[in-house]
Image 1 (cartoon, chains in turn green, yellow):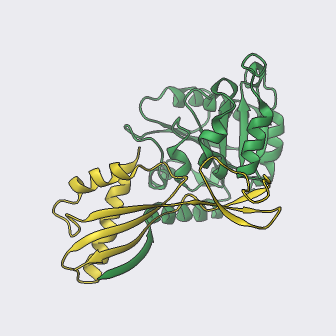
Image 2: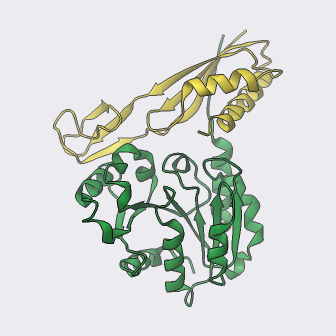
Image 3: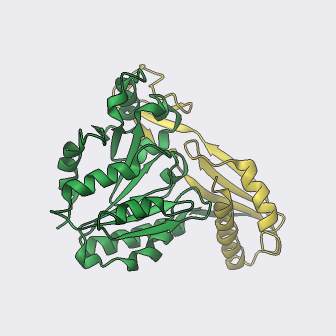
Length: 215
Length: 113
């Protein structure tokens, strides 16, 4: 006999994701899931954005890493509330981890929470974790073939930040290839060339981010 | 890479369904996986054989079918099946396309006694 089931295997994660979105919407907190390879410049980019807007918005950060607390210490040095989330080997963050960590923050006193996901272009794309928007950071030295190789990440992201943009010519990086590949998968994706060392491009990103702020 | 946690959920969902339907033995579980997910069917079966011991679904064979990638062409309005990484309309060769799914991941049905 055949029993029809048709249930999403990740239904528990989806349920938890929606619960988190509801809570954050009530508290008017914008949650941003920042993804990208190890070394793409996720922490540096988040740091730059925080420095540019910390006078205007109240920000918290969840630092996801397989081990250690190096990134959390960098953020804490900015005087920003930060919680380290160690996944003990897991390749991605799941919604339930965010749910468990959220009570560490005073949501009434926050406008934005950044989640820095595990450095990985594959698995984090498959899990919604309560965020309002997803951002993928692709650094120029990684190469212009990454959209084609890791399509799901670019399908799911609202914005693509091209970091270390000042090295574009050195690596013969074909920016149009990346843009065309990404737009084919996701016609709404926005592009932000950024050089975090000089601050180039950060203000354009912040301008775009403003429309998502809930307060 | 996250096949173990995924497998544990397959076991959980199927055990619930088996209990609900008063099933004696689950012979096969049919799972549908979109082409764009990074899950490896062989790893899921490997974990399943170990993690299902002592559960209602122990011994079941997993039948994992990949759902092919479908695109809709905004130019010629045709829907086509394409290969992963091949995001061009095979009818008109247009690149103004829309993806129809690809990251599905669900338990379709169970063959039971």
